[in-house]
Image 1: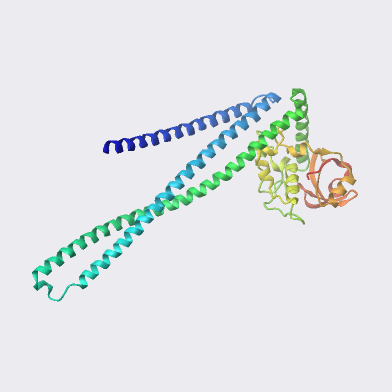
Image 2 (image 1 turned 60 degrees about the vertical axis):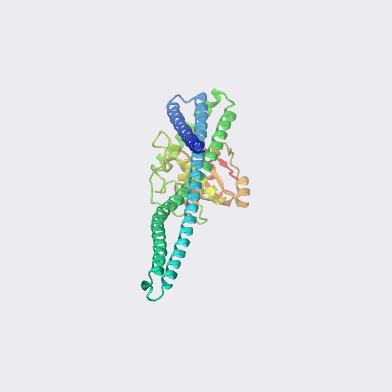
Length: 389
């Protein structure tokens, strides 16, 4: 029987070690693959900008996100197991401490009663005295042993109090991981959509891709020309006023003016320099009840055109000719309109927030909130509009 128990314990220990080794190997394999795909993306980023290469980049990004999702899910499972084990051990210890405490109190009571039962001059009757002393010695020994056990268990309880703190910390870390997982899944869906959008827009044709790339580069160059004509980045103080409606964002706000858009390799691609479209998009989102700063938009790759990489994809594919009646209709319905303007030596994006028949009030990411359109531009300079509802 003893041999069977030893064998069983040995088998369980062996399986546990094997399982832990497998999990460790899986984690190492995931880390190696993530490193491999990250390196691959870096190499693709420096390769020639072709449609085939862009598709490889999007595919690699998708695969990398899948790997990171698996890594996050494994971490969550590990945390769940650790938290569950801690809970079981803590509950078990509390039960043992409560049981021992009750026993210890009972023994103190018994010892007290024994002392109260000593009759006067007991020491004169040797037979009764010997019996009493034996009982007393027995209870005293048991009580001493229980007291030592209680002290040891209290030490263990103190240690487990630290583990309870660790458990709380692990729970908080797991909640963070769960939020990360949710964000990664959204990114995964966006990456798939970006690839589908690219294939649809280019019809999987290299000539169409190069034409769209040239168009995007021209627009990007035009945005840079605007900022040059308007006086460069000209970053201003942080936390700029949000306008009469509370929805305005300035591209020049010191909080994000120098932030690189979409981790661009061109360090001049900052929000302060070419972030008028990003800021206009943030203003419209704010009007719709979604508070997302230009900084947060600029940091999320899924927001950007897969061709230009620094221009908002939702603005690129949503262009239509300017019509005052169309703008007036949108404003009357309580909706903002993004306008692309010819300004200085390039193009510029602003948000029309009120007015009619060409007399419009705008939120201008460069000049500020609640500006009169005709003070800086004119309806004749409106190249196109974007309806983002």
